[in-house]
Length: 166
Image (cartoon, rainbow, N blue to C red; front, side, top):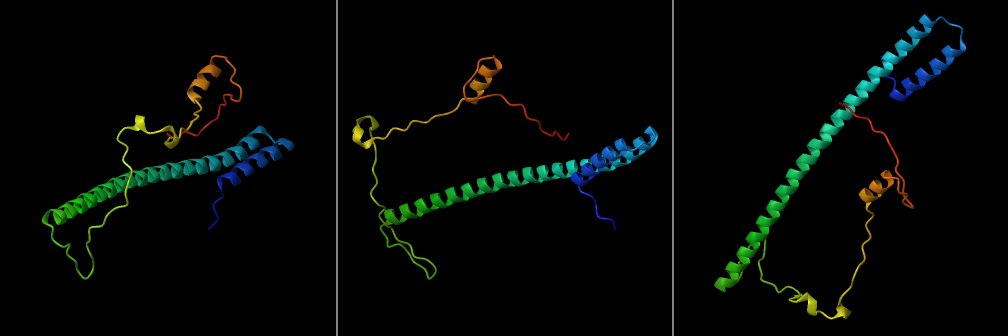
């Protein structure tokens, strides 16, 4: 079985053949037949690559969606566990009974480290405050200015391309 050429190899073959044919004194019909044969193989490979891209994108979307569902489920389980933990703690504290224990686990009520509670932020002295300056580049506004013909130092508009697979 002949190994399948890669798209870049087919592209190289097409360009090399085109150069070779231009250097030879051949009839236009012969040139057209040879280029048509190479172009057909290239087009078939390009379509197959595009199909593979579409499959990868579909699989990535499915994995992303499954990940969202799994993350939502994990959050639900964590909330349920925290709710039940708080419920069990409250029931132990309400009854005043000693927390039960088993061979595979031990329950105990433990004090958390002390924490600071801010009840009026405006009254906290300046020595206990820190301000941070956040700089955000406003690309949409820069784009509008540049499109309107107004130069913006340090920025320019650049046109790129992308492949659309429909």
